View 1 (cartoon, helix red, strand yellow):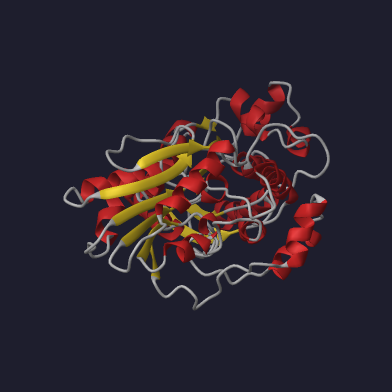
View 2 (cartoon, one colour):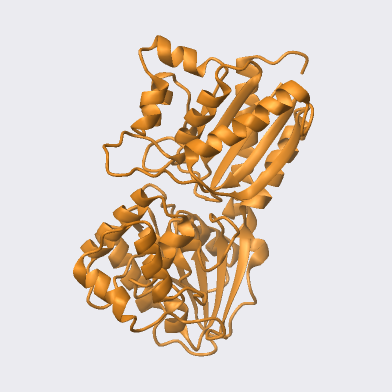
Length: 425
């Protein structure tokens, strides 16, 4: 394109983001990864934001197999199924349906034989959506720990290490309950590094973390636990299944952040934009990553390094927002990243960006993320907003909402974590 405008840049970024989401659609991906059909029963269990649509895709792919089971997904993420029960539950903090769904999932895999097959459909969000407290704990305990971890700045791997050791179903316990049936997990990765033990807190795979690891994470981030919850971690009874202990279980990834970034890069090339994938597992504080990415974008704009414009910088992963003890506004990690980026770019012309959660929901709000344009800060100030103050109180959603720069996709029914694209002309 000879001359980029805000409208053409925004349209291109939207196409790039949608291409990344489409590449992880389980309705397209799942059928190619199914195992050999069983001689006995086939029980389907699922947990995550994609669990219901994965269950529906499985029913479509195996119309000649008698299927039963239950899948737990987020409110608003259910789709019609014929045989597999779908339960909607709370996310990112579990609710009563999260516990009910977990109990139904665990009950579904009881009493099976070696001729039976369990297919576990696992995707991001499963940790909160399928929450069964360990003996001696309650759902209220799990909710309190979840809230504290979400505000602590801990990574998803660190949060899940704690969750596993307060759970009766995570950290391989679901797989252990399904023995001796063959268990095949089909998963959509939403975690940096695609570690099966981290996705939905690894209910069907061995757990390399320990009670000692969980205690260290709690201490490192200053997470305050109720005395009986701290006792559960201190007593270290009933450790999770460790590597090598689940020979009947196998695991297969059907969609990952890297495959979605590759699809985004192909879309960029089709639009005449040179793509550079910076990584699919980028972590860190959201606003600080915005500052770093702004520096790279300005280098492309000014020096043509590390590539010449028109170019797009693509990245994935999951950043964090450390709330601290002060009051917090509305916003997720993607809009916080974008505001940090906008402040660092400081109105530099020829730089635009989109960032969003591929599941369509940035944190707890109704948007996937948002867009940054060269005049984002100027328009915010003209509307009476102080961008620095907004960032300080973690109220980025409100700023982008006022500017009509939120990215709203609705639930996408998949989840390969966050996708960020910075276009430089």
